[in-house]
Length: 185
Image (cartoon, rainbow, N blue to C red):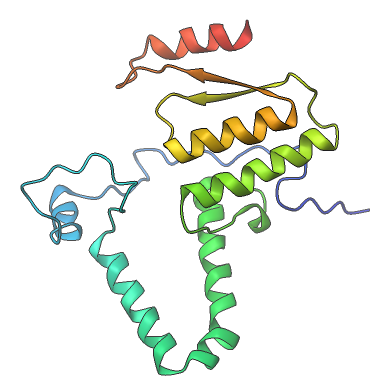
């Protein structure tokens, strides 16, 4: 009898695929990075790309191509091409993140939307007894503000507690073992 676990509804995962080794990985060169981001103001070093995005030129070009396809024939694009294109993207992402099934991959507009979807699942998990009252959610102190507020609201309303971990930046090799020690305590 086959078991169908969609959207991560399983506690038993197959071993993940190994990470790419430096021998097999293809890294982007400095000149390729320069080309992909030549549309950015060179006098500004953008550290926080989350607020407004930091889109490479090749992605902007692909977006424009898809937008023109849609504008040429919206009905054909929507009914005959969009679902397949989204599935193709989710399949590529599935391989990149080593997900077990494509149904574990969702494409959303932004981090706030993703957090809301995830936190609704957490709230349901508390309601269905998968978590106990007083269970703890751990978040890093530099999480996006709206996401932090959402975590606090959903988890505490569901009966859980939130612990905010102060993690230095940049992280050095001494930090990880200390975090693991605190995690087990």
